[in-house]
Image (cartoon, rainbow over all chains, first blue to last red; front, side, top):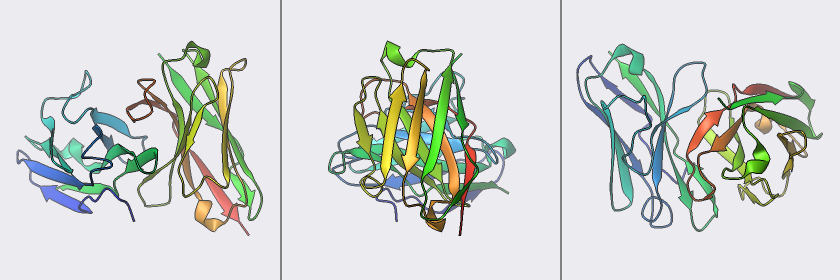
Length: 110
Length: 123
């Protein structure tokens, strides 16, 4: 069981806004940067958001990140069918001296 | 453009040692500035970080795997490797190698990934 807790699933219709949460603790999300990864079927993960809210070049501004206390969130607005896939949060954990991934959230576009 | 390619046997017998290599092209491991990592994904499950290595040989490991894992680097061949001992069926997974953007271990920004390689542990 992951120390970073994500809902197992999320869904929305095209054009809607969906939010995925990542709940941690003071030793990880509360004190270290959070990263969000998108994994489309059959492919390696790709970074969507780094340092809580920054987007690498090429990632649409429909994707946004935020953090409050020991939780972080990924929001996807203007949902599109190609957004279907799995989404993972990741953060360093000071207690473990290692990287944690959330359990992942499967996004379905209805 | 940096590229990473995993190589190694796709089938390993239970209780034996899994060995994989990640060949890096388009960039030099010895230039520093990045951590080189192994990450795995069990069938139908989420991502699990295995560990990191810096070009100097400094490592960080997932505590749950630390007793069985070694990550090493060969800068002369521009590659790094994973060995996982005493494998069981629970080690069956897709194994990815990846590179971080920065040299700060606490920033798991993996900006380059290999395509992943399936490893099955058989009895």
